[in-house]
Amino acid sequence: MKSDREELRAEIEALKKERDAIILAHNYQRPEVQDIADYTGDSLELSRTAAQTNAKVILFCGVQFMAETAAILSPDKTVLLPVKEAGCPLADMATPEQLRRAREEHPDAVIVSYVNTTAAVKAESDLCCTSANAVQVVNSLKAGEIIFVPDRNLGRYVARNSDKEIILWQGWCPTHITLYAADVLKPRREYPHACFMAHPECFPEVLELADEIASTSGMLAYASHSEADQFIVGTEMGLIHGLQKQNPGREFYSPTEYLICPTMKMTTLERVRLALETMESVVTVPEEIRVKARKALDAMLAVS
Image (cartoon, rainbow, N blue to C red):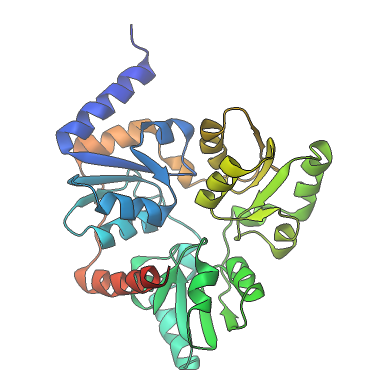
């Protein structure tokens, strides 16, 4: 006899086939949501993967800007976000109007926007970047002055690795700024041989303690090739599920119980099923904005 969870998973699989859908889950999603997905990963990586499939429907288990990016890259597909209220506070810390004012104040600067921004902000940007390629993208530019939007910690990390003048936007990830250096030192004493991996959205003093600074996909790759058996994971706790699945013989620890993104955790299997049942949680991007935002993404891809 099937359990309720098994029946729910079976219903989702049946609906997925009926809708000709593909399910994407960001690395920060609940473990059970990651397990039902066809692909897990970073937001842009997932959107690019989905664009290359023949699926008619993309169900993106993530937050609003991620579903928008999928819609930008796959205008011919239907993009669903299981919880339309699942936003990103960091993405909301930059608006198109603010970018236009910044461009007026710094007419010679190039605007580089992190993918953790709305489609409308991407459309006002010269090019985008990810946490994995931000340094490479900035250093590829001829301009000496860069407006880096919106995460100031990622911007500081880029500035440390570039000779460009980086104009920092005063945005931050509410999850990553809950991690302090003192939080890292405690598990380091407990696990002296553990490797500490940190996301570049963390405070500079946290990054100073890191053995590896990487995006979530970068952490997955690093852990798979590292000789270490224990890891302290300096990013949202959801990544630990993927790390453990890929590395069953190794141990992964979160340095603090506060590394949780509430909006990422809003997605449940019940909401996934409901989205496929009703097909009502569609995310669209106006064509004028989509075309401009696509240019910024393409400019990044041409570099990286």
